[in-house]
Image (cartoon, rainbow, N blue to C red):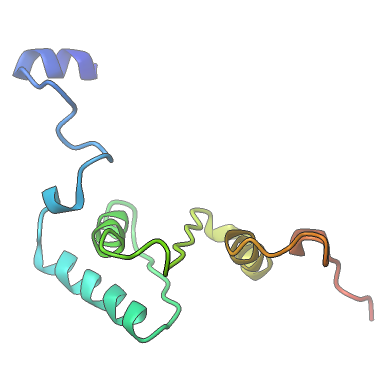
Length: 115
């Protein structure tokens, strides 16, 4: 299907793929507001959570805000599944920060004490 659309319109690549550079993104008012809120979290060393309906521009706003970050100073942690709960989120954070594995098991293997 995509091949036929590309052939019909003469596109050499898919026009709206995920591999667009941040400078190529549409600078809508809502996008600028979301990027400013994300930048506020970054500047204030706060943890931010971006939520919204499917297709509302979460990934686009994050991609634009994160593009200017120095990867040596900042670690971006992407958690696509909101159903992992706090334990899964903590495990993702610990894994992203590359904590030594020989000190304790991963959080996903720890069990709550019985009462």
